[in-house]
Length: 315
Length: 276
Image (cartoon, rainbow over all chains, first blue to last red; front, side, top):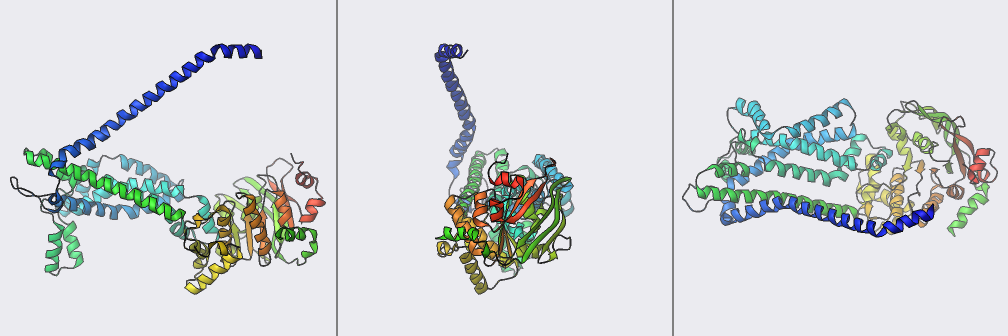
């Protein structure tokens, strides 16, 4: 029996080895080829945007407001400032409830509220962003009577919320249960344990989640169409300096920053690209480039920060 | 040198002189939902002694240990019946002050679990919980606790580095220092050396001999040699014979007796390695 088996193996050995080698090589080339295929669109997009947008890229593009057509120079400062204002507003509205909800969901995952929370988070992340814009239009823009950065910020927050809840919850779940037990065994209360042991342990991951949510929302156009609208004369410097000149309180100035239509990079891109003037279309490519660079910077900053923090914690 | 001290303890049982009872279990049973994990445990833990709890896996050693400081409450549906007398007062009641019990009965876990904070903040965490804020008080407590945990010389120059930068054995001693910093009376150790190498294990065992002068120690261990080396008393736990998968203490005696002259056949089989 054994010898028979060995003979059979010997007979097939060469053939099997060849087949193994062939299958191995074949699968390797297939996966390699498809990987490259998947990478092509990514680099194509980046390369093409660079190629098209680089021509108009100069310092004044970042520091000046748009000039009328036909005039040299001008930039998209209004859109850069608007994007920052909208993203910050969104973050302010979305982070506190998002983090607390995530704490609840990770601590009590199988309670009715926990299950509902997770389910509705999934649903919310699946809602088309244009619908979010429409919703905020109905609940804020309509009653207020005008478009505003505030409404845009709320729409941004709704885009960020599910991302923040999800990533925060995942990060909290990754904190070893032993840490929680260690703190409770010293007599610490549950809230104290969450606040001073679990949250700091998960912080780098949570912050990464924030930044991903912000960069995702910063690239959204649809929620802003009905809410922030766009504003080519939006200029923080003028608002602040004129506010100070008129001795307005900080709340007044803040109100003026958020209580008027605000522009953003994707909105500007969308508007410029629709215009029939080659100059504007050129500029819209540059806006795309700037938007990409901003989002890339946020992502790189997140990674650098997380790495340095990790190294500090590991000693 | 140090090993001599360890063997002395077993060789001279007269070291075991004081027999003041620190903790006492009276008919303690524990349940996870409907499952009965512990049945009718009766044992005593003597002040300034090391009591080992040994037995096969899944016999409820950790469950018993966690009953002492209410850590079992964290498991959903867990409940403990019977009396656990701590200095004569039953702490297994709903009215028991869990925070106070956990402060007075500290715990060291199987895997070192320092918080991702500095060495100093790890040790100061407990005292801060109890309202100690003054820098001098904290500095003093931190140094005292780390010294007691025999870690001071290794970390005194890097108190503000992360606790996670230490080696496994150092991390475990840091966790011991953290438990000591809230001035407990009893220290529960749940297989404190099972994740450590032999040298770190030896250091922990030496440390226990040092600590028992001031504290009462209960150690759960899988390692029978460890129980024989370090403990003064041993509780032998086994599953009930009736196949209910419920654990109970089959024999509780001085460690020397358990290992040389066990009364229970099951204990004898286990400590001689004939357990199957």
